[in-house]
Image (cartoon, rainbow over all chains, first blue to last red; front, side):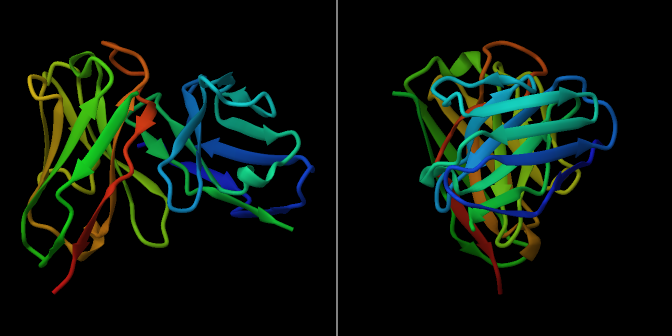
Length: 106
Length: 123
């Protein structure tokens, strides 16, 4: 089983600022990595797949990078609707999610 | 519009059984691998199970293996999760979700999600 970890657990950011979220895999997952956003009370939303490809309709302020075991999701200028929990998920083997990073208002 | 609607969540006693359903619309259901994912109170997302587009293959997480069974009826555009020997730790909001790519093995990530149905296991 591939174990995913995310850091930090909570990130406090002011609107308009940049946020950088990290995700690490216990073994290489190549580029088989997706990112999701989950707002309170809503279903998760696919943001990024293939480590760096934005899903349909996802704004350009969201970008993903990395390969192997280290990945990053960057939000270039936080909007009010971006305050949420973000999960990474590997699909190199059977799927597994990281524990999530909560992005809240500073 | 692509849509997934889960149903069947209730309060059940430990050791009990339950069947969740997920009704799909707006896409060719029989072309896509489908997943169940859950969100327990105070915890993060946990992948539960998947079933390939033709029902020919399933896989479950270790935490539910041997207790939960995933099935589908492509003639009814429906996905199911039979949950047996339920435990208090199975209490969660259960989502069904669709794979993004049709008829592809692996690439198990999800682009459309339902709103979820709540299962509470409590005496």
